[in-house]
Length: 470
Image 1 (cartoon, one colour):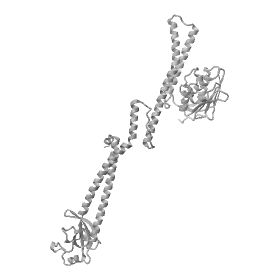
Image 2: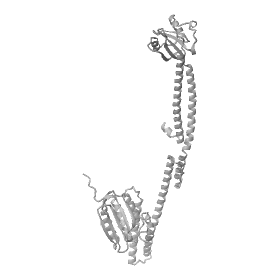
Image 3: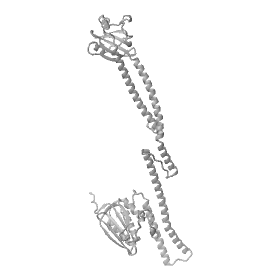
Image 4: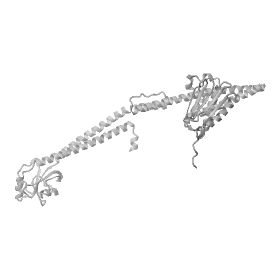
């Protein structure tokens, strides 16, 4: 049943559920109304039995005459039969005789109790000859008998049958109307869902992420529409960034590849022409090829690093790392790349949770950036604060203009003044990615007196955590 219901369209399910809910409500109200009317009709019949009683004097004369038996029709009391009531007498032994009426009624224990004076009256329903009677039994004053007055419940049953028919017709009409109203309401209520469905199918069919759904109100459908619009906007932005990354990567790869191809073609032509290059030119040419191959390898490594999701592992486990030790190794590597640059250091102990290789690469990229922009014979200061975990790398280069600071961590972004220098524009982007992944923050700002200062903060402590117990 559940699987069959789930196979129906959403509109049909809503209409069916509305119809069932209305049917249950109407059925409950109809049953309550029928029971209430029946109770009122029975109370009215009981009031009529109390109000219309045969005079006791005639009945007393009948009892005293010893005629408490079945009496022929011509010998019955000539007292008018009020509302076609059946009247019979019941003595304390349970014997009865009918005063007037068409058929005798069965005597119950309650009737005998009234005749014996044990009860004031008895009011109940009996069945005689296939017909229901409402019976009222009261003591007959001055005798050891009771008088039973009964009226058929046919008139009540007819009224209740008519009421049941009317209520049934009303309930059926209400259910059909509710089903129709449910269809209309489902159609109107699901119209925004239809628009959303059409938009999703359009995106899946055409990959057009510029689709937007009009948002009206602040209900659940409006929230769903806003979420869909936000999702398509995020997907469009992601696709644009992916295309931009591909274009930028192609542009960056084209330069070293073109230079590499030119140098190799020169070597090939000199060999084919039988005129080898002078040893000094050949050595410089091979060094250039080697440098271009190294630049390509570095660029490909940077692209691989940036292609990983933020939550993806970087190739090594997260460990407790001494940031001061990492900075010390990075300083030694930077000195090899800038032999004419003086690097001073003041590194206080600071321990962080990070992937060692990625953290060292980030610090090396900061120092390489400082070396690249430092003038010949310049000085780079590297300081690590042991109370806050702040690593500062300050150079004495030309500095970064204020309007370029917001873009320094973007992929492939390079300052116009640095376009002629080697590099791919990915170093600071990798630094920012590594620092964010370790829960820290990175910023660049102009240094007092000229140059640029990089400020890197990572959460940690000046002492390593204790070793876990064995």
